[in-house]
Length: 185
Image (tube, rainbow, N blue to C red; front, side, top):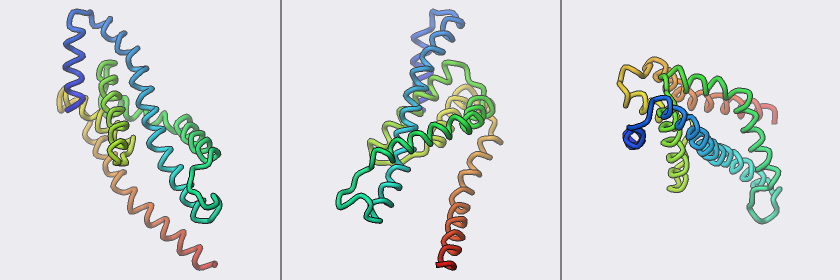
């Protein structure tokens, strides 16, 4: 819904410009929206990892009597998130940007802005959210606002199935790891 409001508002502003001028304007604005989304991504996903590592260090007495997140944990988590995005992120970006639905610069701006607002707003309310869920929902919303048939629902469905399978799969792998460690200790 937010994406639709953004599209309508921005469309009204650029009603007297040529399509080429509007595309160029939104290509520039996409740098801003992508930067905000990236900041939200790092602030959301990296902090979850930092928190888990800091809790493990604290529970083992490695932080002394006071709980804090060591600077080396912050830098390491940020570096690993950046490397993961650099090496594996292009496949996700390609799927999100062209396989679910084709986005023009205005639609990309609206999806990224809607996702960024969600990534900044949800943690402010104390709600942890997934950046992948956020951008997928925004892209599907922008595509469906154009027309329902613009979204490749089979690909969107496959992504949702992967999300559902992830939780029990990781639980099973964690249980197996615990079983192996318990067996040998």
